[in-house]
Image (cartoon, rainbow, N blue to C red):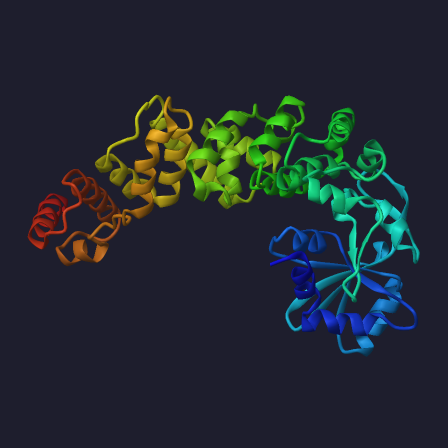
Length: 410
């Protein structure tokens, strides 16, 4: 799809047209801004549509209500109103200028100047406006940078960063996704000079931005730059190993969209690392448990230079489940002398059905094993007996195992 067709498709949605018709009254104008325009021009899927409008927040609320559009004042102090139409969500923000900021929060003044609104944004490629008639407005050179695969701050990089220190991480993330060459030197210098401001960010904001960075198109390159600049280690409370992330990206295509596995490749070695990283990045309990399981299983594979044979992989799958087995195998592979040699083992784990114990507590109770602790102990013996026999499915052999275990349990 060419650029013109992509922009026409972006503008053609019925829900969006309804929003335009609701807000654009009494001389006001609304334009699409930022990521949706950028992504349409680069052929990426569009996840959300943000709008910039000359209307004030109060006018947006009143006009939406009059048009039967549900409006939620999600960021009223900063001029942002969330609009919901036919299951689609749009964020409309009044044109503004930052009057004062402490690096996390800004005081704003509303206006009617699109160019002034563009100057307060972070990067040139994020400050493109698309009018209802299909015209693109570029006040800061974003089109040229987008075409060149270049990510630059708007104006003075240090000033942009001091307005919101999260922009340091966003600089690396957007560079990883949209740049085709080295990081912008001026932006990198400013990020290094202003690094102390990262300590003022909430761990939740750091977590969200870092996990997005890890699945960006050129994540290994950006992470390498961050690590060498001394910006990454303090954020994750661990010594990063960018080389392992790069290796993982080479040998595991299915890990490209798995930020937690990429995080593990970057900085997970021991089970206690999982808790430390989890606390620093405010990971969920499920995410911490996944890292802990992977680290525990990785320790059992420590020093393994060649991929385990199929029978060992099947036991690994049976005892630990597919996710933990796959995580640990990949984390072991990127530490091996020849990671590519593990590709067959990866394929086996992906394709092999997960073995399921063909016995249940009911089977044991039917043979007279008393309910309670004895059931669990008998099932544990059956599990190891079945695994040791190579996971047989012959009914006669299974019955013999069951009889043997239950006779000793009674």
